[in-house]
Image 1 (spheres, rainbow, N blue to C red):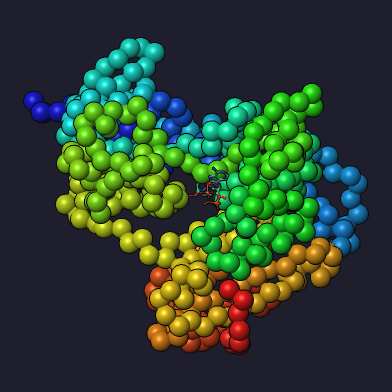
Image 2: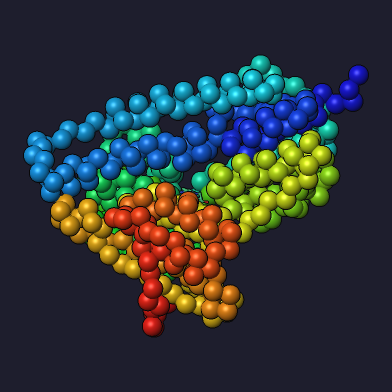
Length: 457
Ligand code: NDP
């Protein structure tokens, strides 16, 4: 008779939890996974996947306009937001069933309900059927994060990305507070669909932490496309009006709109999990503190993904899940390497980035910068006033390319490939020795020969 009900009980069936669970089960562990919402988690149900489907949908508006420059004569295209949302939801239902099947086929027991840790080896699950306690040798917390809104008067009138993905109708005038990933992605999507979009940021620029040339180029391109960016601006309160909402700024200044969305970051989902009861260490944000093996200070309790609030990206959580399962249940200790994790922002135009920003590289030594700003070939005929930016950051002493950044069409697809070169430690000479593919934008990365003599950032 086994000492525990399970070898592993995972709380949270998102990207990290599902990967860790199904691999652990494949390695012979008896695994249960607890989920109180839809299997698939933030990325599949409320984040990356639905967002990208809507971004794809919005791009047709630009494509129809661009087509006119290539000989196409089109009538006024008709767009049906409700149909896009319902088609997107159909795809999410399909993905949810795929995730459920993956768990079943890998022998993971899906336990529906809300988990709460009651001891180092016990979890209580509450569902409409009642409450039941399970025991496990190891408990893995993969409960992800949730939007966090500053507590200003009237903030309850604001929606978050969760609701923005489910709107019944397009707003006319949308104000988005925040300038991070979610704010710029949704701004581009709604703007392309004809919504008047204003962003409000407390800082001087969007996308804090990204290379400054990415920030400058993207904000410029967004403004050219019609998005207003209100900089160094703080919302003091939100009031409902006859036609929508009024946002109170400094003094008597206000912005009127018919929808307000907050994208002011996310917080780890640790509230009510019982972690404090068993003494698991967390930081001030509620993020669970773990070591390189995702182990907390309570040796039977582990955590990975957004709930640890480190690099909050789906592929990072998935890789952490792989390392966890191999280390704990496959006698194959793996430690994830967090260097040069590439990232993309599906703004309009999109961003792709890997490695160090110029600023971070300069903190490590002398650098050379190679940069290209150009009008993409497609827009010579489309007539669109859009520009791309590509940039390499090279350490002068090692000649290694430590940063590769792009704003422009296909940037996420292009940067994924270059991320391999950065990860492998490629030098600028090796970039130069690589033959370009012509005519592409990507070839710029292997044909930039002139260092920037002097650079603003
Ligand atoms: P981010 O952390 O990216 O950005 C938060 C934004 O909100 C910043 O502009 C920040 O401003 C602003 N902000 C924070 N607090 C306040 C406040 N009190 N008042 C006004 N502004 C505030 O968070 P997001 O919500 O955009 O996204 C959450 C995370 O989800 C991302 O960090 C990323 O890890 C992940 N994500 C990844 C995506 C991708 O890979 N493509 C897509 C979407 C999300 P400031 O700059 O001044 O700090």
